[in-house]
Structures are given as structure tokens and as C-alpha cells.
Image (cartoon, rainbow over the protein chains, first blue to last red):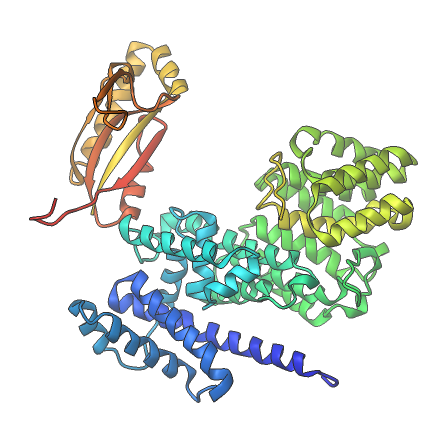
Length: 438
Length: 120
């Protein structure tokens, strides 16, 4: 790419460094936990090595063997801090390169970080730090929370792992489905969090990239799990269209208006293939279905040729597997194109009790009311939506609509933003609960 | 590692239990005894408690004199109704064990703070 300024160069170099650290940190952690048998200590050592790397590599240059460098720093630090703990110290002293981390080790690490006895926020923080090699500061910046909050979360989680006896092991076959759901939920939330972020967070870590990396790792380690492939496909389908989602000024561009030539069609085709392979295992799940819905949009040559019948069908299947008012809302949005706006509005209105505190419920109603010529009711619904969202890009869009009425006419135009934000909000906004601010 | 399982009953559970026929209650107890037998190698003791309305609570931080009151220290809809101490390798083993518990609807798992000889 030509015309890069020094700031972009720095950002690129920073990203490269992060990727390098991520590639090696998790493996080192996995190996160290196995050898020392102490999750907390091993994790501390790796974190120290990462901090040293982030400080020194930009100045001294990236070493020829980054893994060996990290290993040596972690080991020496360990020998130093564990001076009084002969047991660990002797284990560490015997360590030689390469630290073997069998694929099992890396899976164990992920399953331990995402153990159901840990809170979701702890699972996320631990996974990012231990498996992806993020520093506490990077995690805090990515989630817009104080660094001390993240640090406390991690300290508490590590203490719980030790004190409550959370094991470092692979789940048994009969536990695997439930445990894998936890891991996938964590990766999914990273995707959402990353997807939510707009220009204001451009300087922070791209969590979608971490979600992609984690899902790809997991897919490599568990190729026979179709939901892992489904989630990876979902992430890739979103990323393939990411460039078209914002205009040069950072405004949200809705699906209908997106320039589809800006989509990465090769990546879309590849993700679709991945999804088809997963489907051949005949074990459908929520991630495969969501990916299939996004694929319907991604594969449509233009807005007019969107296969809404197929999308409604997929939402029906999703409702069957994972019923929720949110999925019903999305289905109703699609129904606008198969059954008409009046029928869709009826279905949306039926969700009033569950979704009254959810801004996209009101924004969707506003769309449908506007199409049906009920401008005043539409404006009132948009105002309600505006009260309930904290996302600046969403707020800007709603303000424009309240001012200009049908400037963004049509529920369909909203589909992409509705999906985008709804997915992002499932975490902080379970149906019916009050929206968080922030 | 050692853990204590705290068995917690809810008002609904209590009502359902009272509504059972004698035969159904017998069967419910039978399932619990069976579970105890199945896990006998891990169980290190425990007991069913008398109902919460038999509890007496003493507060020692209320003033110079201990304050004795009638009832459990937390008045709530959910009450601890029994406990079992278990010894297993790790939390996953307890989770597996508890997943087949046929009694009350809530079980809290608390690791024991194990003190070596000479401490405490």
C-alpha cells in the first residue's frame, strides 16, 4: 500500500508485534502450566515476558527466534521469583527449548480459561491474556474499562482456579459439548465487542482479529466440531465485508447501500465452503445457522436478489435450536420482505414485553411504521430507540432519521446494522433487561 | 481436594415435597440414598439439617454482649438444608458428581481451606 504515513507504519508494526506475541505466548503458557502444574505462576511468567518483549522488540528489533526469547525471559524470571519454591524452581531449571506444547496442551489452556466455574468476564480476560498474550493494559483499552478492573478480574480468576481446584485438563467426551459452548461464547463475545467498536477505538486492539485467531486455532485443534467451523465462518464472513461498513467519515453504511465491490468475495467464498463442510456433519447449531444467514446476505449479488425466504427459514431453525425474543425480532425484520411490513409489524409488536428496553426493537418498529405511512408513530419509536442506545454511530443514524424522516427509508436497509448491533448486544442486554450505558 | 457441598432448598421445592404422596417421598429418599451409595468412595461425611426455623443465630459484633436471635442468619427463600464433605481430585469431579444429585434444586460447592498440621 502506498502513501502510508509514519503513524500507520507504527500501527502496522505494532500489529505485527501483537500477532507475533500471540503466536508464541499461548504455546509457552500451555507448556509452562503443564510442566510446573501451577496455572497462576506460569501465567505470570509469560505475562512478564510479553511485557518485556513489547518494550524491547520495538527498540532492539524482533529476535530471530521470538519463541526462544520469550522462553528464556520467562524461565529466568521464574528462577528468580521462585527462589524460595524449590519444587517449581527445579522443574523450571530443567526446562529446555523447544517447550513442547502438544495440541492437547493448548486446548487444555483454552478450556481452563473458559471453565464454567469462572464468570464470563473472567473467562474473556483470562483467554485474552493467557491464550492470546494480551497485556492487562491492552485488554482494558479494548473494553474501555480501567486497567485495575481487568487486573483484579484476572487475579481473582487465577485465585479461584487454584483455590477451587479448577483442573488443567481436557473435558471428557460427555462434558465436551457444554464446555465447548463456553469457549465459543467467549470467542463470539470478542467478535461482538470488536464489531461494536467504531473509529473512536481504532487505536485499540482489534478484538475481531483475536476472535478470528482463536476460532482458527480451535478449528485446527478440533476439526470435527461443526460449531467451531460455524463460528469461524461467521467471523470470516463479517470480516470480509468490514471495509464496506463505514464510509470515509466513519459513518455506518447500511447493508442496502454498501458497495458490494468492496467486499472480499474470495474470503466470502472460502467462508461459505468452510460452512458447507461443517454442514455435512449434520449437527447444526446456532453458530452454523447464524453464519448461514450472514452468508445469504454476503452471497447475494445485490440487495434486490437477497434470498429472504431462505433467511426466514434459517431464522426458523435458529428459533427451534435457540429460541429468544432477539431471534424473533430478526426473523420479523426478514419477514418484512416475504410477508410485507404490516405482518412484520404485528410480529414485532408481539415482542413488546420482552424487548421494551432494547433500542433495536424500537428502531425496527420505527422502520416498519414509516413504511406503513405512520410518520408520527415512527418518529416516537425512533426517539425511544435513541434514549436506549449508547453507541455513537447508532445515535447519529437515529438522529438523522428523526430529523429527516424517511432519509433511510425501509426496514431492509437497516438489516445489517440491526444484526450487527443486536449480535453485539446479546451479551450486555439479555432480552428484557435494561440497557447498560457504556 | 476437599469440598463441602451445601444443599439448598427453595420454597417451591419444599411445597412440591409436601405435596408428594408417601410412596413418592419414599422413592425420592431412595434416589438420594442411591446417590450417596454411588458416591460413597468420595463422601467423607455430612448430615441433613433440621429445618431453618430451628436455627439460632448469635451475633458477636453487635456490642459487648453476644446477641442471640431466633432463626437463620440470612432470612431468605433459599435455605441450606444439609451438607456433605467430599474428597476428589478437582472441581470437575465434584461438578460431575453434583450433576446427578437427585435431591434439592441448588447445590453450592465450597472448597475447604486445608491447613497443614500445626496450623490453625
